[in-house]
Length: 272
Length: 278
Image 1 (cartoon, helix red, strand yellow):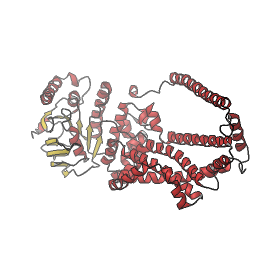
Image 2 (cartoon, helix red, strand yellow):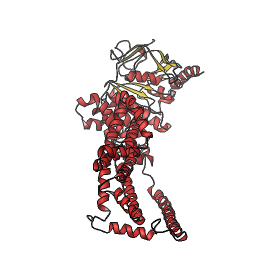
Image 3 (cartoon, helix red, strand yellow):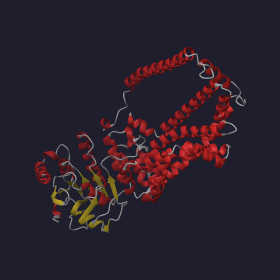
């Protein structure tokens, strides 16, 4: 691993214990037809506390598979995956997950949806603090929709609610699997800005999967480029663009296009 | 930000379109009804059919009036037998749908239960279940209990199949969500799977309500003290075909009311499917 700590805007990665660490993590599954598929090769990565890391890679390279492993939804078949030094054995309250679709439950209001994590599983032990949920809704700009049903919201608003739901247990890590992939370009850009604002306000560690090179460069401290299946980390690219990043200034930065070209080059080589 | 919010659908234009379409539909339905009545009358008059083969619509209406325009407690009216039939159906329906939902849920949640029950469920599903009615009468006698049991048996299967199918059809992403929250199996069942399956369950209830009525009447044909099935066989015995028709109309109307009732409850409970579709 070439984790050169100098590339990070917050914490030098070698100094602190990484919050998420993968060493030779692999995942194999068997298809219905009995074929064995190596979804993940040997994935090695370290993510520091407070870091914003984007994972890009060709379709089917195992990005989502890796995210599911970190989320504790599926077990690793090899290697070692730790969260804050402890091996990942299952879902944890320290991890919030945002799915590809907003995945809100249509029978609950927005308020009931975002406070669901406080009413089930490990969340039941905590006292439900409605005003804190309301603060989060306000931070995501959807306070006025608290009593609406998901079908009354646009796709962008639904995804904001999904982010609030992932934050409501105050986890240390936010895992996001192409969270804005289903949205139109304008909404997507706006939500990118909002996500950076939420990240900076809440000091979470974010691992976000995306297909969009522009999105990864705009958001991340570091972009990890994955190879085609079986996926492994090809290269890590530190993004030194100044923060706070804006839609006006960041794309105009001389490094922005250079970084995008570099990542695109790596991905195209993989796609062939 | 407000640009992202979905505005209300343009109600004015859609309402106008619906009323024209609704009018046309009403005209077609009414036309077909009148046409059927005319065919009926022409058939009776043209072929010279006797009233004990096919009575005229007017005679059926008279028989219907005779059965309905009486005090509720009148022994010759439709109300007492209808009450007997409906109460037995309702009891059987509740029993059968509750058991179907419970077993369907256990099958959906626990693979061993599925493996154990599935072959029998499918075998019995393809059996015409009214055929077991005589057997049930042997076991439970000619009283109310045999009616309730047959109604329950007929309701049970659609509920079992529908609740099982519906629960299994829950989007895996929703189940994953509950897993990331370390929700218990019961929490996932109650908050995610059961609401996901609600449209299937209501379709099962809708079918079950009709089947319960059907089962009760078949059981009454086989022997009972009272009920619409008994009334029909009694009228048949004296060749009062107009009376039989009147009974069928009463039962048909009851079936439609039951269907509309379940639909109304479904719309209130499963409010999100109707509106998310529009």
